[in-house]
Length: 244
Image (cartoon, rainbow, N blue to C red; front, side, top):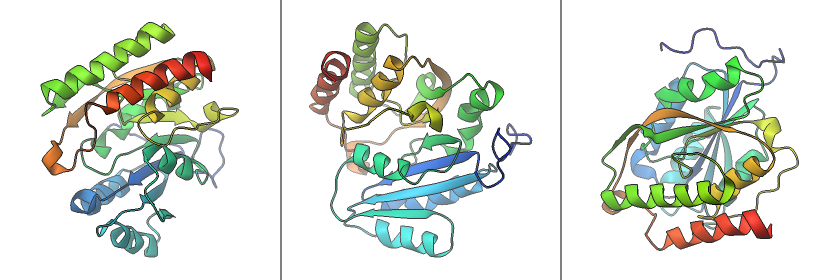
């Protein structure tokens, strides 16, 4: 695939450590999971893939177990649903890659764009965090309400933290693993994105944004975020600026 060139195993020359760890939280994504995993595994970058089944009640766990039995991924299983934030924390405990990238399992984001997220981190050792912005790229099929909500909470974050982000809530977050040293993550559910971003910004890291494409789902296809979840996000923005 064009765009990657000769990617190193890791920038420090450690052949035992992959360049990338892809963390995939999964909750009832059977309809898209096989296709998503095949796309992730096809990306020509040295990588570790960690999938976290967060208490799925459909065939997701069986599909993950099939891929894990083939050695294609590392599987972490939660007996009960704990939330995306808890799933990502579970994956981070097993991450070996120099760069960690978060990938949803619903095909809204395209793994073929990993090179866009990785490139600034590989090119510049001082770059620590890269977000894939849907609003700098192409946000196809995003409803007007979803678009408004994402922009509203991002602007609220910018106001509180003095940043200039366009898409704080994006799934595509790529981070040098060392940037998380000394940072403790707590949020289990919708507070994860503002907490993650807030603690990185407070630690002095600049978030670099690159454009990515986005193909949204509606609620009938399994989209789980509702308007009331925006209140949890706003509460977390304030909490992690002034109270934590």
